[in-house]
Image (cartoon, rainbow over all chains, first blue to last red; front, side, top):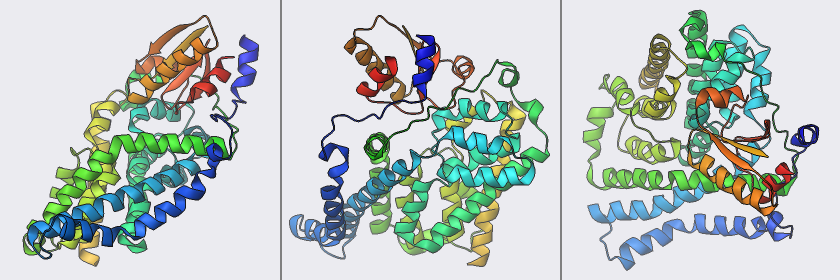
Length: 357
Length: 76
């Protein structure tokens, strides 16, 4: 059993159920056009539903809030579906194991930069933060680079970027990507310079460790598509409620909250709004998908760009559950340094944009 | 055979355990299924992403939940 199973571990066969043309990807030929047809008829459909079927008054508060919700809800969910499917497909080519191997041989600032960039595309789930962290440091990835990756992976993830791109345009998406990578780079670089290896929990370095061979899944298109569909389903099951809740909050703000009010609290003139947005954002646990609808309305209602971006980065990049999980491998000094450095980075980015734009 | 499911109890880990059991029964294997839920034990097996599937000490998959058919291939 032993010898045999070792040899077949590397050549895991394609996970396809059935083999017909439809099952192996042919359904995309129907699904994609349907998606586009739906997406581009959403606005008239939503207006028809809100103002004709429900009989609400166009221009009234309730009417505008409801019309916003029935338009934005399906729109964001549709976008999310296509984006996550595409991204999950691409991610079947990228694995944390490969990222780790790329980083293991680097040192210095380059390792931080590379880790921040790889964090964008490498699939990452905060539930795997601990084994991933140990896997990185135990094969020789510098501690600083490991942190760069840990900051960048949840914050500048590709789903967030595509959502920003489709809802706000390429300028804001690019700004978010560049500043997010910069924060990841500098946080990791600072932690590396501080030489905080001794602030790891002792078991991290003491436990016998031998990296398992990555399951080099050699699979064809149907296999990858199958995995991508499954991942999309998983993510959807997890986030759809958050997304709808986010849009409901957005719809309420859209219909009921006057622009002047938000502008006063979150506009450029209120400098303290940036640190406040970060403070509010950290304990909030939502992923990019749930937070973007809210950011959309904040911006439309006069919140400053820097404040809105800082809020989004704090929500996605720093989260309470992940902090609790990381406490298993980081001693309090290192954990607070990590949180502090990232928070300061986000606040600086917020200020920068409020001053520049 | 000894099937180990590595993971701290997230939804995916439970799904993997269910599928592994179904797969093992499907091929009539004589098996014991163990859930490995503590971080040091998970890490000691060398995986970086959960859920992980380990059969007789060999890591067969990590970071995703294979289909029942795929797990059957991995068990053979």
